Image (cartoon, rainbow, N blue to C red; front, side, top):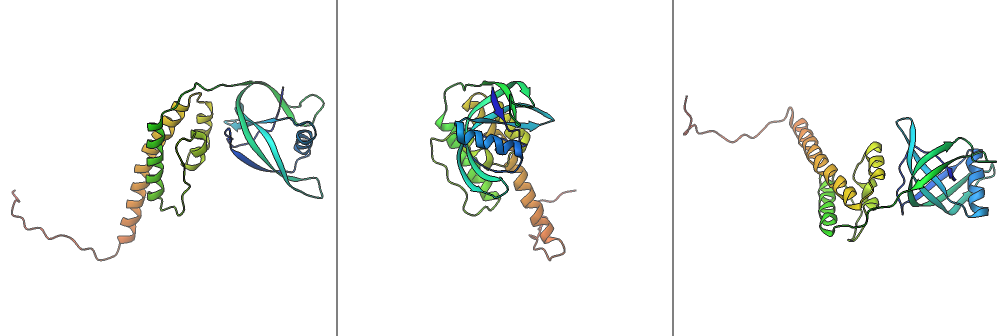
Length: 211
């Protein structure tokens, strides 16, 4: 059984997760992590249900407050699917569950990584983002998933994909839809800015004009 800390967010393997712990049940969970070295799961609460999540390991307690609250940093480990959820872990205040840890189908494609990075660069240019993050090949899809404007339900869907090739293709597909939308928004902004201003039109000579 795995202790569970449900949240309305998606955590990926390898991701650094800072948390402010203020509820008594999760103060108890962090204390157990420190004393016993246990891990816990962060299942994504979405559409009023819990199904997929990521196991995380406490890396450090960054700050302790007089009232028992803490700032902690955790690191994502393995993805799981909940088989049975319990509102209380035996003898504890926090929740728990029977989980199945999921394994990826191995394999990746460098050309897909290159295509993904190319599209990310185009998106950042269109958004005029200063100092965009830099990614080196090889990388894994989880490293860029929070950097391409996915909505929560899209991040969650990616959590359920069990192949790196699937995840790379999913992100590329998202960008191929998103980039034209951003371009159209930029065009609309320019049109709005020009509204009410004098416009410089090319003269028409009507040489080829027929009725």
